[in-house]
Every structure is written in C-alpha cells, then in structure tokens.
Amino acid sequence: MLHDAVGGEFGFTASQQARCASTAWLQVDSLNEATKAATVALKLAATQDATPWSTEARVDLATCHLPGGRLDAAQETLTPLWSVPAEWRRTGLLGRLGRVQELLSALRGRRHQWSPRAAPQ
Image (tube, rainbow, N blue to C red; front, side, top):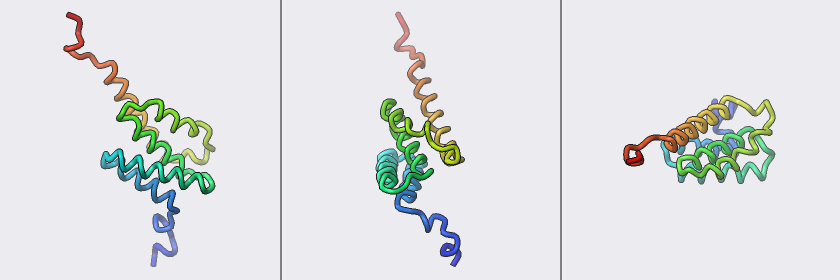
C-alpha cells in the first residue's frame, strides 16, 4: 500500500492535521471553523517541538482576524514569525503571507475609499 511506505498526509501529526483543516476552511471562507482549527494546531504544536507547520497555522489564524478588522490580534499572532529559521520559510508559509498582504491592502483601500455620502456638502 502506497500510503504505508510514503506517509504523506496519512502520516501527519494531530497538529499538522489541524493546520491542514484550518487552511481548507479558509479556502471556503469559513472563518469560524478555520479559527478553531488553527487554534487547535497551535495548541498541539506548543506541546511538541516547534515545526514549520506551526508557522503556517499561525498565519492561518492571523488571516482569520483580518476580515473582522482585528489588526492587533493579527499582529500579535504574526509577531513570532519574524524570528523563524530561514529553512522554515517555505512556499506554504510565503503563500499564506501573500494572502495576508492582500487582505491588509484591501482593508487599507476600504479605509481610504471615497464615498459620495461622506463627501462634504
């Protein structure tokens, strides 16, 4: 059986499975479920040795904070990333950070967006 020899997702730890779930929930815009899964992933990762998976869960959780405008929570969640080892800066992490950048840009654009109702009379 292939999965026995290779492992792949069949060999994921509980933390990795929760991180994978948080990403899947984000893909279908289910922020509550994504938040729960990312939180579980981080709690489980805290009881084990830190891994690149935990950095990805951290970005998923920050991504959940942004649509609600919880910028302080997102910043607090992301702060530990700035000191991660270079070998952990993989495609999965960088792609997630790209989504954070897009969300922040959208928030900034909305904040500065001109509205005819807000125009001076």
